[in-house]
Image (cartoon, rainbow, N blue to C red; front, side, top):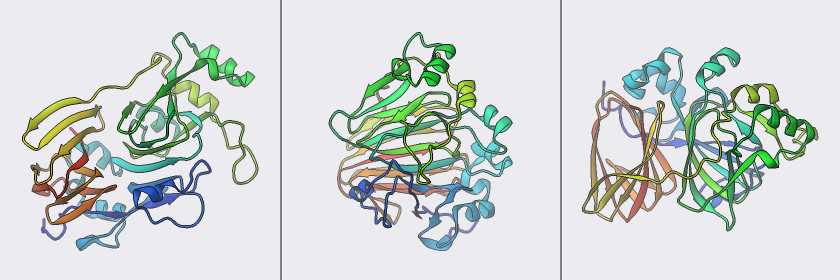
Length: 329
């Protein structure tokens, strides 16, 4: 494969104007179109939104087009299952929760395949980029909640006794397996790494109206099919130190069958050397500071996709920097 076609790629994002958004993504350096902006799909190859390559040989091409051309050289042999389904495996977003998101749940792959066509399930994780004082999430159900209790709560409009609230602050990370009831509440800017899916089952939407003046659809029966009522009152998982040397520390944040996400802390001048050996793509995001990915400058908050067949690469911290690294085992 020509080196012209395999290089660290950056993208023009896709913006989504869901009603719970605001203008806070401007604080992360995004130039936004007019109006409410809820999400920026940074690296996306989904039918509901596909980001466009900004740099190099593929500039101006949609990620889905690049994937169609490069196949496993882009996503890697560890993602052969996604290749068979014609799917790019992951999706990276920024979210502005200017208002609360709905109380919702995502299905796993088996349920999505049976009920949503060729859609994937959705296991995801969040990194809190900014949090207002008192910010919180809804994550999981209260201990002892049964499906019967929960359905009755929905019917009576009294869900609060069954919702587990979790305070969060800047820098926290949250692992959200498919089946976990959740809601991102107001006052949070979040980076989200997830399976490439846009399937959401809402159970409660705060009695608000959509842009058409009507309540947004709920998906109560499907949600009750997939909510994991054993996932009761989960807490934050601490980062796990996996490597440390002068000027560089690596922590594992989330590990599941779909992706692994690490946090990399680098002092100015530190260098990390890695290799994309054909097994998996790597997605690197700068949370703060500035780095060079090979010859590509990357600043906060931006992401780069390293093709699976790229070979050896180098990341150098120009300033003190914090990065996210995501790959598939």
